[in-house]
Image 1 (cartoon, one colour):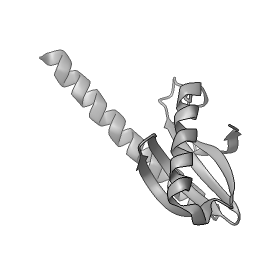
Image 2 (spheres, one colour; image 1 turned 90 degrees about the horizontal axis):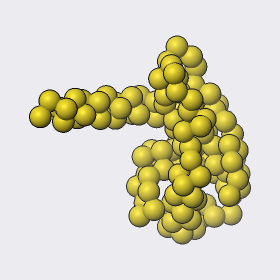
Image 3 (cartoon, one colour; image 1 turned 60 degrees about the horizontal axis):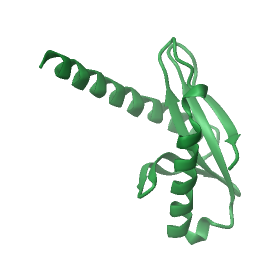
Amino acid sequence: MRARRGDAQRGRAAYRLGLRAEGLAALLLWLKGYHILARRLKTPAGEIDLVVRRGRVLALVEVKARGAGGSAVEALTPRQRERLQRAAAHFLGRNPALSDLDLRFDMVLVAPRSLPRHMADAWRP
């Protein structure tokens, strides 16, 4: 039983860390002039952390939070990229008014004792 309780506590801590990281990422992007269209958007293909727009750019943003020892950049696997691309297709299918914008995939990296880092156009499908 003890191992399960520890796992649950770690899971809750990771969830709270993720929420804080997404909040910091949203604040950073808002300060940079982006309009937050959606947070934690659920689609049949998976969740999109943030959907933001600035001018003609529509960015789907993956937020990665890591402890001091982890690298957030390396945390986005090819499989996760494919999932985000499928989620993007679903989102755009449900929001045709946004389909004429320039789609971009961004990342925001959050680590302890440093400012969040926005990586615009982090990858291309």
